[in-house]
Length: 254
Image (cartoon, rainbow, N blue to C red; front, top):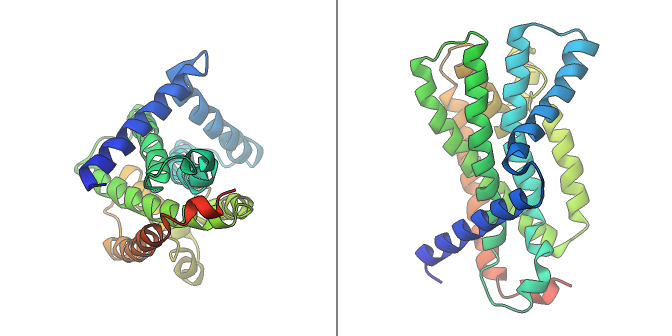
């Protein structure tokens, strides 16, 4: 299958998944707003009300971290299990298995773009003016998109061969969420902690979004470049595994 046909299938499947998801609920498209709002309100109440960490800046810092993480977390958790979830179809039809995790990523990306636009509108309402630095946001989105694809493709191979790995992925993602600076600013920690936490590309991305949106500062391009190099390494490994194991998947998926 050539690249053009693969892209067309991925895009169509992503569209079909979004359409099916909307049709399964009474609120339909409104859930794209309601779900992240409920998600953010839960953590806002926990940290801002119960732990008394208030202030408009903290609200934006928290919500920005949650929106950015939600895209990564939901894509990786669902996408890593996507090949195994479609095992019965895979055993009947010979198609590139990479289609399944890629379509999950594309569907979640569409939802993220919708929610991210709402986030930028909220930021503006709360008094944070649009600045020229916002032109860097598409670069951050592309870097995160590349990271999500890399990690999702790699883990989709792992979970296909070790189905119980889904539970390991879910728990690791929960731990990673708390280590990615979603609920705090890594830049406010001592240097020795920053050096460790910034090894996580998602921590760097979340801080970069906040630097642009809240602090009106350019991101640290050096750290972002390190994250890109890590993503490239993971992606090359994942593509190699998918190419080598494409015909093996039906034999191990039971």
